[in-house]
Amino acid sequence: MLKPNSSSRKLPIVTALLLLVTLIMAACGDATQTTAPAATTAAATTAAATAAATTAAAVTTAAGVTTAAGAATAAPGAANSAANPGMGVEPTVAPAGKTGGTLKYGLSSDPSGLDPQIHTGAAPAIIKTLVYDTLLRLAPDGKPLPWLATGWETTDPKNFTFKLRSGVKWHDGTDFTAEDVKFSFERIAKKETGATRLPDFANIETITVVDPTTVKIVLKQADSSFLAVVADVTSSIVSKKYVEGGGNLKNNMLGTGAFIFNSRESGVKIDIKKNPNFWLKGQPYLDAISFIMYPDDRARLSALQSGAVDFADYIPWRSYDELANNGTFTVYSKPATTSAIFVNTTKAPFDNVKLRQAVAAAVDPAAIAKAVFFGKAVPLTAGFLIPNTAYAEGQTMPYKFDVAKAKALVAESGYNGQEVELVTTSTYDFLQQTAEIVQSQLTAIGIKVKITSVDFTVFGQKFNKQEFNLLTSSFSAAIPDPNYMNQLFGKGSLYQNRTGYTDPKIEDLLAKGRATAVESERLSIYRELNILALTQLPIIPLVLREEGEAGAKYVKNYVRFTLGVDTNRTLMTTWLDK
Image 1 (tube, rainbow, N blue to C red):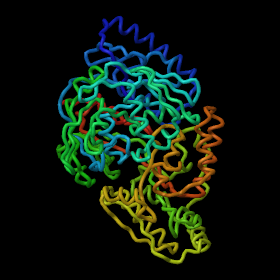
Image 2 (image 1 turned 45 degrees about the vertical axis):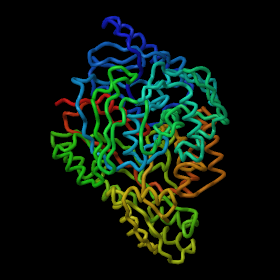
Image 3 (image 1 turned 90 degrees about the vertical axis):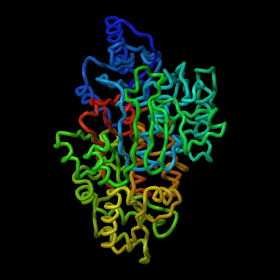
Image 4 (image 1 turned 60 degrees about the horizontal axis):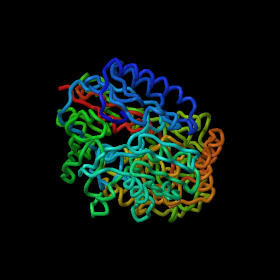
């Protein structure tokens, strides 16, 4: 999502502008000849809005970075999009009016772990994205862009060669090399790591260190989504020396990113500070960010309104309009996340598909959109397919809200009246409120439901250990490719491990979807997979909700993008006008 690449050689302004125009034209021409799958996220629609919100004098492109002083910084490897098939279009970004200062950020949850390769929630991912780097990152159009890798070559969806950036340092001062990439990806592929991307990286056949700045990766099976996968924060590169030397990634952080982990007071705050040796010259603009924990929605909102923090995540939907109309704050919101019911299919009574289907028919998404999200959500119409993409066009759900049908399915299932546990968390009001509506609507069709509401840490533990019958949670397309569904349903994946549902047909469709780069074939495959998942229902999708942050007006240059795009990295170019 962000600003590109590096190098420090300064050019005269006139020369820089001429070079910039030439490279923009080249990049645009190459963008029409890509071989990778088309972007599959609604994030593409944000590019124009982003450009309109920034100044024409400051343009960040594949050619380089315009710094606050107006001097272009060349980006080696980034300009040659012909060598980077499928490369996205850089966003525009305004320069900082001033640099320095500490951003006080109200965070909704205290991270249960800091390992960047293990997903512990959207809130902790904000910090991880700023401390660690990935080989690539995603543009607002959902396509890959250079990051730690200055470029890539691929002859087919099984073979990828990455050219790495020279001169990058770990936060302990040691050199970043290809050995770190090899170590990181092999670590993700080990089951004992518990890495979120295990199913994707288990597909790697070989990783070869060609030289200190070149890595070649060969996959067992073709994967058209692989470039998007390596751009996700859970594919972050970690230091081989640090980990092998006993470094604890769960409790400490050592990356190559724009910010350095400074300190942590568990349950209170995490402080990160500017990396003065960051490879992308001129960034970040802030001296530091202090992430202050406010698990309670009302306390977090109050902290923002009182000035205790400058910025906050997970703004309550009921407060969007109030803040937006206040004149003191800016609300950043996009449709981004699916609220859903997760079902433990490994034990009675929901090992019976009829009862899962009964739940899907009994719960009214429209009621949840209105009561919980104050109209800032819409009932899903295309299930697990990414909204506003070709995959979702014309698709409809195979079931609808129908109480009579739900009661008939309960009878057909042979449900014996046993009480079922619906787990939720008191940390996020919207999950608890959703659970209460679900409880009421399931009671109406004869299913006895007990709600267990716990704090977010315990909630995560119960989710991971399958200590639930039903559970209210969320998911989103972490990558802007329909193969994000591998995380939902692929054997051994993040959510499949939690629902316990396995299906050879789904595994086959996931493999076929990854293996082809032909868009028409992928459409057919993923639509079939979607209908199968919506019939078997290990996860019951409910509504697509807006997700939003808010900040004081003096917080500048923050931009929220939609599904699967690196919104968090815009904090690198955020600055304080005060």
